[in-house]
Length: 200
Figure 1: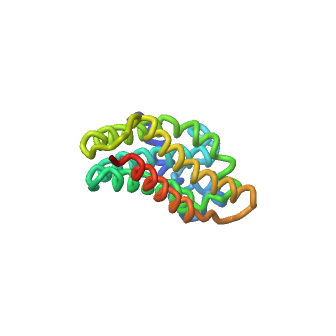
Figure 2: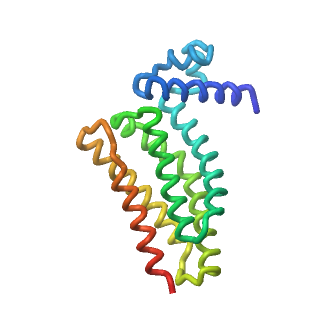
Figure 3: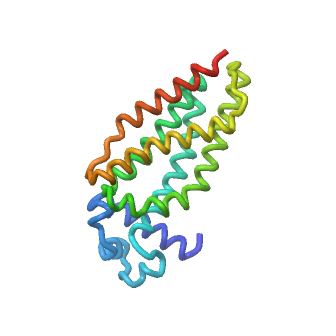
């Protein structure tokens, strides 16, 4: 790791502690600089604003979580259980990142475009993992699945859409809290519906 990377890692750790303590909205760059032991001007060399710190660190932690989740998923019995476990776990992880750091609906609306831009590479890897999972299951469990790659893509896109839909509704209604309960129920129903239809 270069010196710059080491400093950025330290900033990220300290910033996430501040976000968890004060919330993303109430945390200032001064709070982060003080926690790291730098002055505010030095922070600007590494990051333009606190939202950029949050997005970069959240995605790095998300990548570590997804790697671990994929290993755990393979230990589950049966392709339907594996698929449901994977989709629900990743949904809960991203939901909890927002809740734990007390990201307001207004701030969420502001950071989503940048988040999606950086998230794209990780999503591609997730789709490859789920495709391989479905391809293996199609052979072993005798499933009528003609296009595992497209099925994997649709499953991830739809579960992400369910999450973003409830977030956008909260933004439009000006709500301060987001209730993901129905979205999680819809994910379970979606997985059950698909696997009921492809079993021979």
